[in-house]
Length: 156
Image (tube, helix red, strand yellow):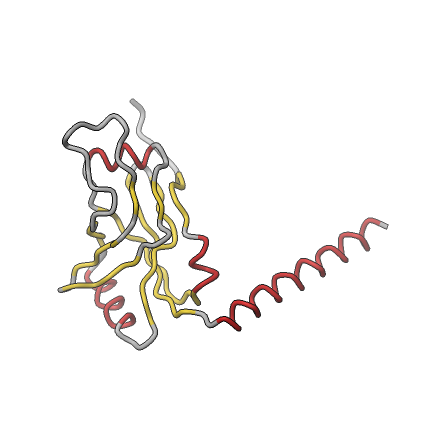
């Protein structure tokens, strides 16, 4: 079997960009079991309620849902188990320092395969308030209107 190359997106947390101001992003590897890898290759994962914690200089992905493998046996994994993330020591200390600030949290943004290895993009984020969300939606609508007007103008 040929080795996989390139990037294959498995899951994306699109709501994170709506609910949080994203500051720094990091790419981390994930420690997985065999049936979890097979389930991810089938695209059966969700990052909707997931979050990341730093405990004793180890980074953990919590509450991420990787559905049980359909053809698994009694060795199947638990869908929402805590999974260890692999980062360099400097990245872990930076994450721990930034997430300890008030109002900061660490959220997963994407999960994908990079050259056959499962990876997660995590970000240090600050929660948005309701009026921040409305401002973001208003700015996006205004940009859409400008692009629409330019398209009509260039058509003539």
